[in-house]
Image (cartoon, rainbow, N blue to C red; front, side):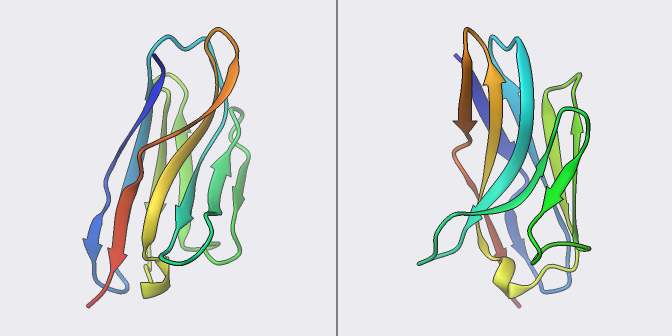
Length: 118
């Protein structure tokens, strides 16, 4: 079945960088928008960044200028480059994708922890 496989989370100091990857695997016919959402402790899940198949990106105001989202359509993979990380970026980051297999379904990854702390 279709699944999203995430990698790249971890612990980083304030001002540091991390790169998250998310690869869609399985019987995939087409992928529309892909992106990353995040959920901090005690808070609701929120959008971090999304990218359409054509490369149009959307960013949360809190990450604009620091995060960069890109995708490789040939590899069904999306990358989130996170720079100038702040403690408030600490959260579980979830990959999200609109995928057409037998029908269109929105899939979620299992989540990867990003901790920004000195």
